Image (cartoon, rainbow, N blue to C red; front, side, top):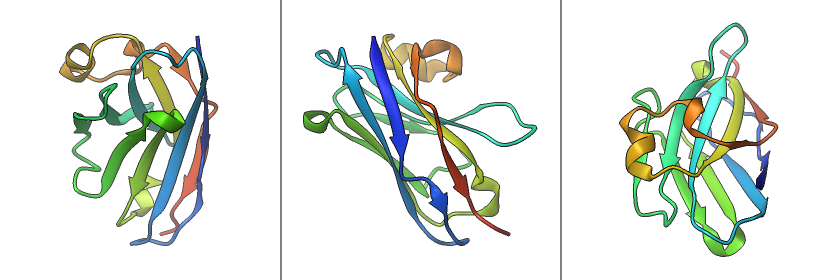
Length: 128
């Protein structure tokens, strides 16, 4: 089992940037696909980005493509989400999640059902 803890959320102005971190502990010996999801009040949880275990492949939701970048440093057991050009609609609780499925399987249709370990979330607020 992998335990995940998000950090780096907070308040940012529209057009600004934040970098979220997802620190993993526990059974981190093998590579794992890691994704970011977000959930706004009254809204369903939605996929944001996913990265392969080795970090060589990434997939993004259309809503964040070109603005957000997912990356990882496996030596630090950490996955990042760099968020640039933030918009008010990016306001949400952001969650990282680890999957034990293949990257190909996950990216066919990235949903929360494909991820087995979840962090507690970190809040991102972008005022309008």
